[in-house]
Length: 536
Image (cartoon, rainbow, N blue to C red; front, side):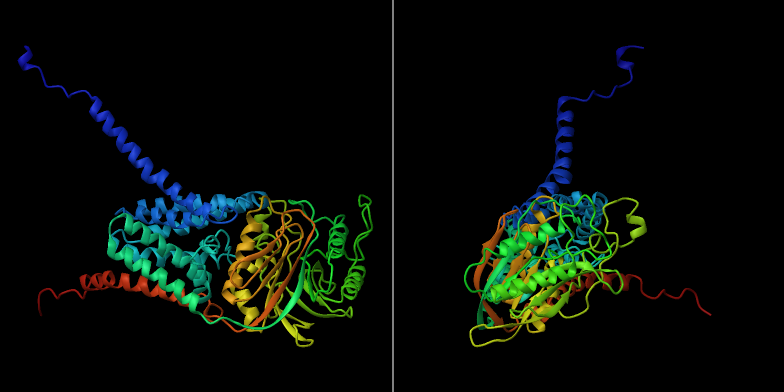
């Protein structure tokens, strides 16, 4: 066989093919990994404690552009990766609280936002309205389920310091989150050169902000001189019967720093933590255990000495059924306890354990018994003089975790609250992620209700927030301090208080239904009644 008769051979891969393969691989890695992670990390960096709010809009713009791929599976992957990059670092405090819980929560919520991507139409005409609407539904679900919801690291927290914040009075926290996503769409469409959808999205954002700014403000009905007490001490501590007296006494010592007349003194959550008389003092304790009667007597003496109403947070076992109870009491300048509020919305895995028998196999740091939830309205009434004589003043109360849920402060205002209190305890948490996000939540509640908010924590962060959502005073972590302020009592409701989530969620559902209607009609026509074949 000569050369002319030799069978042809395939050309060896050349430099050009190798370069093309590398470029294709790099493109895949960028679009499937780098870009989604970058978008999610930008959103994470916008929420407290980092708080670089413009990055939320930038991250959502990038996320939105990634949803242009025609494959629903690809959009699901990209969206889930972006969500994980957002939520994993922004909830890393859970690692110290419950490693399995952190992993499960991150996976569940990433999957939820993955569905946002899978359901989002890839064409720009439908994607622009669908993306914010789907985000609203996903956020509403995350804020309410499972186990009552986990509204942490939210877009609303990120934007409470942004120019979008006034919209909160009109649309509430859900509306602020929605407008943040719409702003991301506006930026993305502008970058893509599509002027019409970019303009429409920008006008929606502007209308929401303007509407919030035009909402009538609440009526000022008096002022109070207040003191928010922070006893101080180390972070990342756990409850221990041998330290309960020390915590209580640190707050007594801090209260001794109050100078001059004061109307209202606010102590944090569960810093009055007495042990039942039936439990003896362990030998390892340096001092006798704190008991209920001693704590109640001491608080009454403090109220008399300061000639002020003292609102203090208790945590103890109920003598009736041995269940834990978390509540605040109102002690008058006469030393009388005149009202009490028991915490209604409890912390999952902290104050109650869902699926306890299963979870105990993975974590040994669970409460030995569940806390019993309260049932009453989120207010206590205190005899106070706001400038025109002593009268019963309704004080709204959201204990710790409850401040993350807008419906608790809405309940307060609907029952007449003229100011909001947030006694809390973040001393057991790692880092300051939870504490800074709680301050952001207090700012949201102030905007939504048009009320002053007083946040009191044993080791920080404590804060005084005005109705515009501005932090007027704030403590550092671990310090012993008293925040003094003159605050307004206010009456009246905002649209956010009256309507809550429903206008925003309802609009989102209407948008999604309108976008899905043509496809539903086409499928209905294509699957019409079968034609008859043959005849009789």
